[in-house]
Amino acid sequence: MTDETTTVRPFREDDADELWSLKRGFELGLGDGTGGDEKRARYAEKLTDDYRTEWLAWVGRCVDEDPDCVQVAAHEEGPIGYVFVLPASLAYIWDAAVLNEVYLDPPARGTGIADDLMRAALDCARAQDPPLDRLVLDVDRENDRARAFYGRWGFEHWGEMVARSL
Image (cartoon, rainbow, N blue to C red):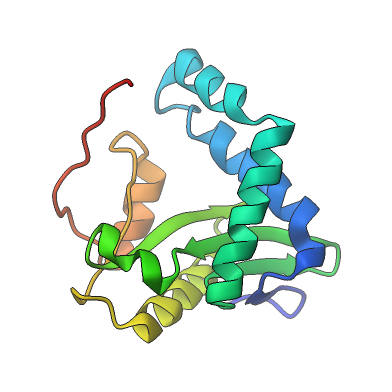
């Protein structure tokens, strides 16, 4: 449970700058320890001003469809983490609710705030009534911390994503 100074609440437009900062942390963290310098550089390369504008516009469209799909964990100073469940219209991607991203600033990890974000994600997913009664996500197999967190929440291996360069 969050402490009295942290709340988990729906994303608001005035959170956009902080959400973008957190998104950058999420993206740049994908290369830390789970892919090396090359992976980190590829993720960093895409984080342009155009990408920021387009991503925040997409977040806005998702939130317009489902106001609870993006939740932020916020202190008085602003958001320190977020969880993003794709809106119900995108459930047919995997025939399940999709946990797109969850991220928490490193200093806030281990405080229970990530658990509050996961509860918000599950609430959002349950309200969607997806074709399969599942919440799915893509997690890097080398990200032991994330895999342990999701395992604690009852996530199990269910297929494997593969990719190729275009």
